[in-house]
Image (cartoon, rainbow, N blue to C red; front, side, top):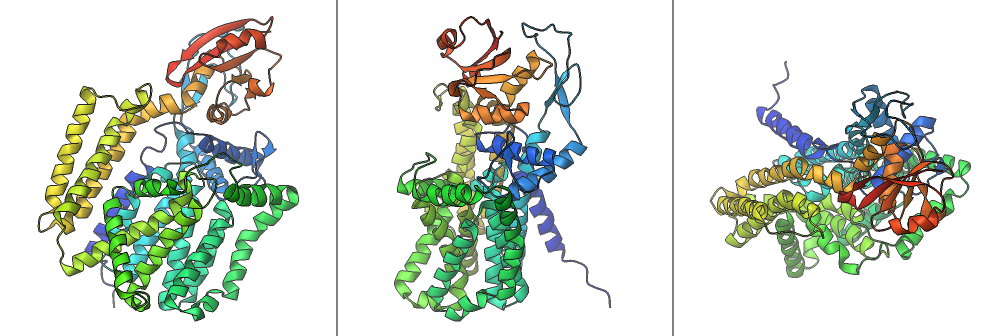
Length: 577
């Protein structure tokens, strides 16, 4: 007997999901240079590990860098290796020679070539950010197949709602550890709930495997949060037997076999690892402001609502409905088997937000593991309304339309805001055009949603707004982001003046530029502020308006102005002997 042909609807859904994931997660990975201090720092650590062939000790500028576990570094190492097999470079011709050189002297570049200086055109950024996009795609696939098994009919909506959240798209485009943790953590909790529903040991094994990978992504926070979420859920269900069943000895052994070897190996090679990673970068980071990221307790409320855009309105509606149910039915709301999944999602969403709100050190990416739960809570709410045949109310339709319009307006205006000094929205012709486009979209979406078919068209209308917004950011804002926020153009300017790897020093320049230039020049910069003044000729990057101090810092040395980079308020000098 031959197998039946695959369901055409399933094939269409799969192609649609692949197309949206490909665009929202992978499009524009190299559109702008690495941003902030973390992206270039993590990318440089991965490159150094790859160059040394060392899969154990992360290093930065040759020194152990023990802040984070290795999962992102391992993924980036593999990504860099593939990128090196298919190099993509452009040449930046020397606009003018340094005072100590002539334009035709040439010299040897970082890759051993002579003549034009090879400048990377995005492959490195794509390679550094590829792990985050890939991890996000794997998480979306897990959500799709989970919903297909346990909530049939909502799998495509659930996957698309999750992948279209601002937080997921943004961190999928980041060379950071947040998305690897979120993806592995999310897959682990989905696997655990699948085990809870059908008691298959394979699901519990996947739970422990994914949890081990989460521990390799960002440390003990993964099993700690998972334990709290599961315990609170089972306590609400009063299912204490499942607690003991979850503590499955083969699964625990599998967790330790996967997670422990690297921790043991890095500790043996670096005796300071336990103190530095566990005590300082986990316990001290949570309990003190040692790393200078103070924020008020409520900081994550607006951050989380923004991360869920454009689905924020529906999340609030879902939470209100869930709270009303709990208030109305009390313990009965926890006892019903049909309410197990929404209850689990609510706890999954709240625990990371509340946990990190209590932390003394707060960064936006910390609560990313709560975003998939919130997105799934939204689809649970929408699926229930669809089954009841409920139409979308005028108030919700208008609110959602305005949010989608606001997203489009922000994307169209991002470049204008970044170019303004100070950075704020300027009202000009371009602003009014962006506002008009956003208003039109908002009205159209709101009108569509109040029709009889509004609930069915909600996903399509929203995805259209998200795609327009992402395309606008990549096509319109990316060049400005690169020019104003990334160290890539600064490195290109330095390289355009010299075919040789001359020393580069910084004065009154932030660590964002320090780590960025370290990555793009692939060598450490020296810091005047720390007393590191090279005795020989070098390029000096100076914050604008800091030049008067150079006479005192460099008595008797010849200082020549090379160029200005006004977009980043920097000046470049050549310092002779």
